[in-house]
Image (cartoon, rainbow, N blue to C red):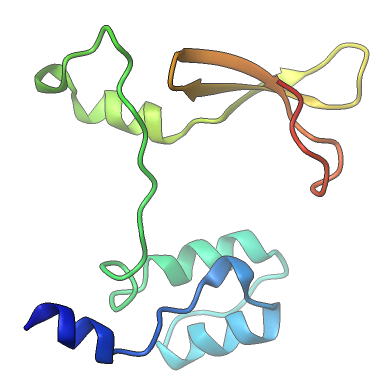
Length: 121
């Protein structure tokens, strides 16, 4: 039974919540390079590890209302998955302007200056 097998497995570690030493240890245990000073590339590398690829939930996005599912190409899907996309810096506020996709379509938001701040819509 697949459900029973899944419940017996140890929980999947969340690389985004790991500290750098733990992240490096997980990469080394999979014989992957743990070199780098920034967390984001190491997290991405761990998420792409062979044993993690099927266990970690993947990013999902909604299709725009004017794009039928049968007309979605790889190019469309790639562009949608790249959102939010940084368009540039705001001219008077020291923050980035991002293009996002929401349930009612595309919208712009000001990215938080501080990672702990909430985005401004």
